[in-house]
Image (cartoon, rainbow over all chains, first blue to last red; front, side, top):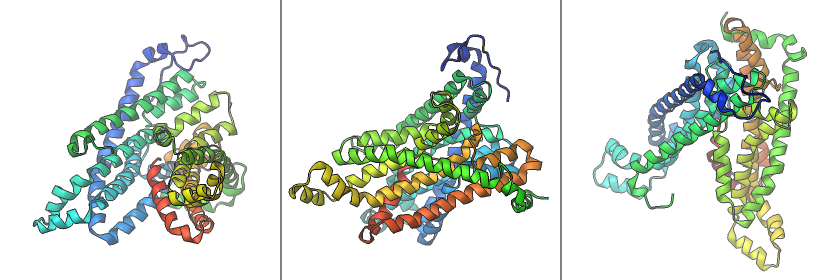
Length: 228
Length: 240
């Protein structure tokens, strides 16, 4: 990916320049789009894998310990090392970035979902059992809805950290906005470009977090009016 | 030859370890900048966290700090700070890493003081201890498990993040991975994986050593609290 820079309107290398944003709007938008798309796919894939895993850990206590230990170890492994392990096999490209960030998002969502499920009061569980709910019915009608706040916290945390983590994808040339930041650094430390990438990154995290918070409010109407 | 075999070969070449810019040099850089960053983080975060916890104000601030730092990409700080008054070199990298050490240290210092038994605090006040004395003699000892848990989380995070310093040629073990990517995936695959093993191994080693250390510094009656503090520390800092 080549970034075409315009230096003519930026004498003295300012921290921000509208001229730069106007002249390079195509590149900036492409980077933003790639970043958003990578984040969205990673979080959705992670959530789809994480929910069954968390339910399995919730049902089978013996699995819970090993799943939590495994996610703990995986979480300690630095992102750059994970890129290093996967890149020789998955190649240089978006699929490697997607796998790495989805793995980290997965850990966050599994842990928070499990915490949410474990918070379901035993009385509620027993009452549901007494009313004749089976294992699946109880899961979908009682336990998952009650664990929803935990799940949503997990998804929000995962989304915000994924937005930041995608930038490390620079190492395989697919870092979304990270690409912008990194190219700015390499092209004579062009501050306006670095700053634009950074601000967009933080804004993207903020906007996605707000959207998810709104979705969470819609999904859990019974919590409204209560201080969370 | 597959990449894993190449990596074994790379790791078994003594020159890769002892050359200038070899593993030993990089390990030294990695550890020294991580240690400085954690030290700087402690110097900033602990006094503030303890004081906020003692006065019972600023819970929102602590939460805000950890949320905001979660959203800031490491790469951005690493590239921005050298362009400020800090200038290029070690100090900019250390400050960037320290920023990511602050949230776990701050949150745990704050929680550690806040969770101190209110009755113990009242008893100390009743005995005529001043505010500072209560903090020093009652709240601080009770907060030790939390401080230790925060220290461990922060240190592991900094050691992990220090690998990214290689993006701005800041040194450290990440440099080996970057150099491998620079070669080409076919030629450098072994070196990339070898670097990954070193970076991941170091992070896991630091985590293990600090877990033992944490157990040692926690007084026996507080060890149950310590496990709870660890869970909180993990929940407070779900960053990459």
